[in-house]
Amino acid sequence: MPDWIPVAAASDCPPGASIERVADGRMVAVANVSGTYHAIDGLCPHQGGPLGTGALCGTTLTCPWHGWQFDVTTGRHRMSATVRQAVHEARERDGTIEVRLADPNAPCGGRPG
Ligand code: FES
Image: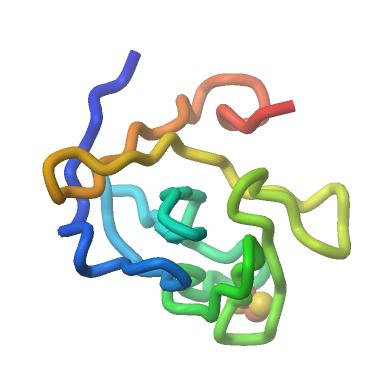
């Protein structure tokens, strides 16, 4: 089981916000949905846009480059069932946001079914 990796102060990502961070060399988009943190791979599969810098509305994160939208709770693209980002565990501990990266070698890159 991979370790939890501190990526940001909780104050950097208030409810309704998303941020971009690098965890163990992997770009991660962290989103705060009503006080619950979610994390998905931060590199947009369209053309590599920085998902974490996009706008968060509810659980939908919109890529700032061309508008592809993902559900941060499932990693699923809003319009295409075949496009999915890996989902990472995320939590807050003592004022720090931590992520635990999905296993990139697991089936579907560690993505939930
Ligand atoms: S790079 Fe994200 S929508 Fe194009």
